[in-house]
Image 1 (cartoon, rainbow, N blue to C red):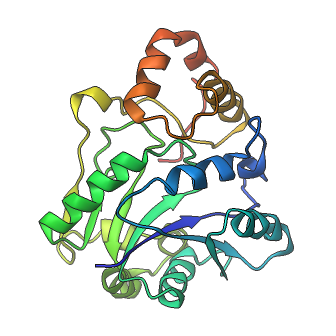
Image 2: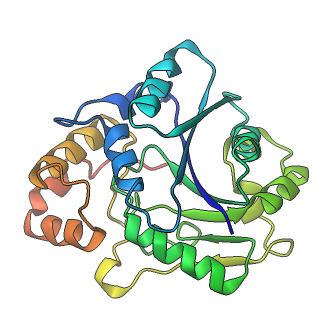
Amino acid sequence: MKFSIIVEARFNSSRLPGKILYKIGKYSFLEFLIKRLKLVKNSKNIIIATTDTKENEKIIKVAKKLKVNFFKGSENDVLHRVIFAAKKFRSEYIIRITSDCPLVDPEIIDQAILNFKNNKCDYLSNVNQRSFPDGMDIEIFSLKALIRSKKFAITKKHKEWTTWSIRKNPKKFKIINFIAPESMYWPKLALTLDEYNDLIFLKKLIIKLKENYKVKCDEIIRVLKKNKSLLKINKHVKRKY
């Protein structure tokens, strides 16, 4: 089974343009994420799926610098972009990561891959039923299932949200929810980079962690429980989900 990590990334974010290229200290958020993803043991093929607009050349520059694959596709039809990125690099199975999750844990990804293999499902994720912190988001699915889901992608939302057509058709696809252990159960904790206050929060948190891109989810949770004042920074940010 060939697993590829596909990172959806683009410069033009509606709420905070260029957010993934903001510097933390030594690294940008995108660089920090890629360095973490390189620690995944069960998949060594990382693909940055971006678009062919001029602004996104900056993202491609990061991909080249860190020696990972990249693909340029549709700006708005993300479903189409991910399918063709997977086809280009001959991926059978996709681990979908969004670039606004710079702290996603490589060990959790590896655990999710093993669960996916053991359950022989079409789709496994920890986003349908939230238990991990928001920002530890992982979705794994077969390319065949994603292609099959295209016939259900009838609205703009279905095309913008890559796996929406799978998630909304549980009778058509075998779906497994990946649930957090007690040590990592904190579904209301927001570790995503959506708005400016998230940027400030994540930057302060990562600097407190000494920009250690090997840090694990349970370690992050322990640090935040000891430094609860940090949680006030992005407390009032409204999440799309």
